[in-house]
Image 1 (cartoon, helix red, strand yellow):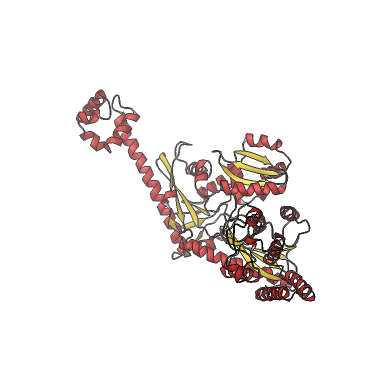
Image 2 (image 1 turned 60 degrees about the vertical axis):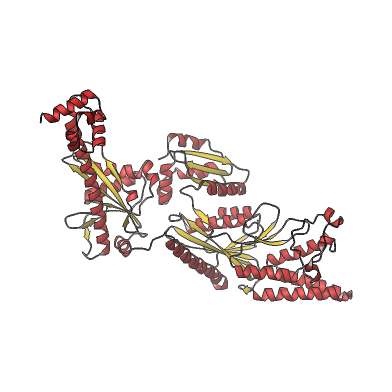
Length: 608
């Protein structure tokens, strides 16, 4: 639940657009969001949480403070949110990334610009096109430009002063008609910039418009008997037609549009965008998402659109095809971001346009499969165990229980009450995530109170932030322990599947269910649950015995006059066991305690 400090801040929040940051008890930012109205958006988190997803419920339980930054517009809020997520990497935000840095074509910001390939987009006034995901496609574009347009490729600083001072001379490219010789002033800057404008049209996919323009110029030169210039334009037109013929026609109309689709599996997703200009597919781009398990598909599409148009602001179509519909507010946010108030959003249902979206979605599924294979090879993803798949089917779980945590209690006649939590990830023990609890919220023998304390301490407080939430919780016990664990989770606002495994008949109990049910003895799911239960029991018993031994030894030592608990623990830590203490000489004991205590200890053990 939100703290009083957070609830007090809600009334004073501004109604302006901006960014809000939620922080946990350590002051760490755990979520960054943007809003058209900060007060309305932030308040929605703290109303009834029945409509919230599981991840949002967990997020709200960890909010201990919030901070807002007011911006002058929604676009500024979106840009700021994007930058903060990159810098802070909050735990509960969706993460978007490319699997590598794709190349761009850049037109440099110079009096006589050059055409280059780069993998870094800088705010240097240059014009960037891309990214290009296919190296072959990029090479064909560069080859076409160099063949049709005689641009310079030298690194000379061609300022007007340097050209007038005749500091440079033309190179071989001029003599083989690959450059117009701007270094000696053989082409005016206005003519050169006109070529750059034509190249810009080509890179934007406006080949038909460019061919029409060049054809008109060719006819004008022919009428004026400038046959050499007309022949040069004819060569350019032929090159452009060959390039246009190689582009795949995917739409009978000539409308510019982008097509977006997303594929997802467990906690990962892949988004693909097709860039279509004049009905021809120029290329595609993909992005990968993580931490998406509890997010809606519309949220993923929206985040994909926002990131894509933040990074490619100069390539805005007139229409966007979507795999999933966006509501009016999300559409308006994208229109504001792209500064295109008439941008249309369409979700095709039938016909060729629907097939185009389906093709985009198929590409997303293909790239996601490849991405998951690469994660598997890098050890970031494990293959699904048959036992996990069987367990998912048996328990009718929404997703594969890749992370399972199991609890067991241990005590001796109500004393030294302990509880253990063991963790299996992809059906294998992850001992670094094991935890043990010395229970102290009750006295005597009370298994239900023990289970309540162990579950609360695991899923609330600092430990809940150190470890990810499990996909399934297993309780070593029957109906009562399972119901207690489930009720405790409900009080914490968590929706995590819980089951119990009773020892005697290996029966499985579900919360608020009267009768248990049995799995076949040969079931891999049962074998996995037994391994979990046995490991939790072993871990709990080991910890319980350690505490009992220390308490017994400590009791014997503290019965000696002058020896308190601290001194007893120092002696145990130094000598390792009570037997070693009984054999130690007075001089050895003096290394740990005072001479009087050493004499008293020797007198005690010598008199036994």
